[in-house]
Image (cartoon, rainbow, N blue to C red):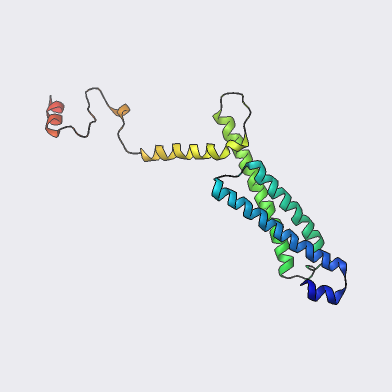
Length: 172
């Protein structure tokens, strides 16, 4: 792109805006790949690190949309570059909203679950969510099973018990 358009146009503004668009796309791809790799290999990304990355990428995309889709920019004509620039910015904003939602949900969970006055830490989010899902799984896995709290006096819940002894005890 640089060798054909920039040589013909001789406009440094057009070429620098093209380079800006390519650079922002490359930085966003590297940042999102690094975040994904951390989530896959480490199991989690520090929340503030994830938020910092998405805010930085979103700021880059704001500048990219302003300069690339401007009347003098390479994305001025309605086409792939124009639409991809705007869609990328909107997706970054959506990811920031999801991060904000996760933050507020975590604070709500931590405020409801903690009786002490300690300061909640957002890095505990992943562990709290995993613990609550384990509790829910154990509650649903025990559904329909007889527990020892259901036992009435004189009732034996041992599945190994001989059924003839059981009948004799119940009839007596």
